[in-house]
Amino acid sequence: MKTSNLSKSYGDIFAIRDVSIEINQGEIFGLMGPNGAGKSTLIRILSTLTKSSSGEASIFGYNLRKDQRQVKKLIGIVLHHNLLYDELTAKENLSYYLRLYGFRNKETIEKIIFEKTSQFNIVDRVEDQIGTLSSGQRKRFDIIRATIHNPKLLLLDEPFSGLDRQGIAQLKDFFNSTKKNSTILFSTHNQQIGEEVSDRIATLEKGRIIETKTSGD
Amino acid sequence: MKPKPQVTKTMEDEVSHNQITNFFNDAWQILLKDLRLELRRKYEIYSIIILALISNLSFGFALGPSNPNVTDFISGMLWVPILFIGMLGFTTGFVREMDRGSIEGLRAAPISPQAILAGKTVYIFLLMCGGAIIIIPSSMAILNYSFHSNGFLVLLVVALGILNIAVIGSIVSALAMYSQSRALIIPALSMPLLPGTIIPSILATGKLAVGADINSILPELQINLAFLLLMIATLWITFEYVLYD
Image (cartoon, rainbow over all chains, first blue to last red; front, side, top):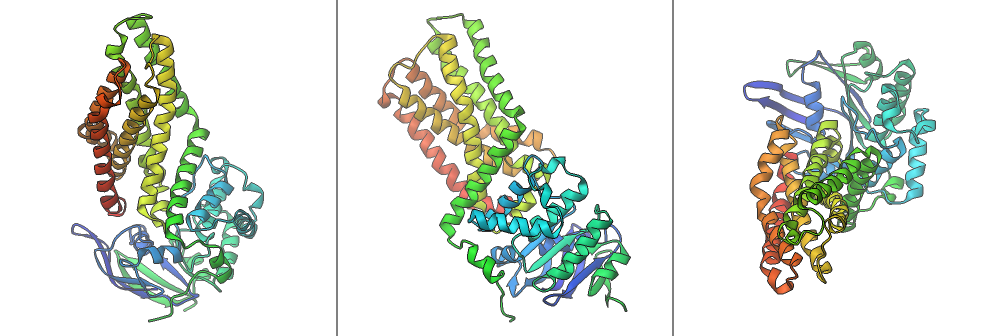
């Protein structure tokens, strides 16, 4: 994934400014910075949800503006709020998203849901309505939703917030196991988690990248 | 340029790449999800049933049973509650997806914007049809009138009118969802568009109530059909920009 002088402005105010980063395949890349630094804006732009004002970005060679459909097939996103429907069960939600990604076979869908929910130790809650679950459980199902189609690039905005200690540990394990097949870009304001999980970290401040370092430096 | 990878081979095998079947599948999944949500929530279904029955009972008490002039008013009496049910559907279309934040899930999914539009429009259409199924027979029973032998034509006029309202509802709901003042914008945008289909629908229903044949309602049917094609064409071309820009 590569961005080149990516900027997003609202009138005179820049949410991000001249952001240029390159993330290698299989890398876990952390975005750190205070609230309002531009982390969420950058993730929204890379998710195709917000259009940049200027600059270029490409994901696995696909241009973010021109090849949106291809890019969408390759990415999975987790935002601040979950994208699940409270009135539907977790299984109905996951099945719905899988079908939107082109999966048709009922047995395959059930198998994928079982495998993914087992990974997060939450398989016994798949028949529960999302609205009846705790915020941590919802968050886990939302992360499963984002990864259910095996995306090649995972974009996660504050994925560790709202998770208990067990959830954080599971997500860290998940990051490490997913790394083989996917690239991960995530944001966090927790420096300890950021450094522990990432291969590289960029620090954003007032929309600009002020520092990029390899984890452990 | 780096090689462009696809999703894991085993998963890739399971994914359908046929654009036409994907379009219908995506629209069907969105429709199914909305109907499922509607059935789980229930309170909107109860609102529709109560609105349909109360409006008919009110007109029944106002006009009295077996009023000989009922056919002069019946078309208006039928279309007002149908329109109200439509307005209910407008807000549940796109605006609720926006309010709960799930619209981002649709926008980020690799699906055609027109499939989203089709799913939402058919949902509003079915919601209104459900209302009409209660409103029309109950008004015939309460107000003691019939459409003579024009049952099929009434269905045609009502279905076409409802489809037009559903299409208007989809675009109005989609246009309003990004606005902070969507509660005001939905009725404000609907107002200039709805008469284009409501007036011919009311006129045609009124004619059928007094026993007119298909030739008498042809102009209204043509206007409604032309309106529908025009709205669909406009929506088809512009909806992508409405959703993503």
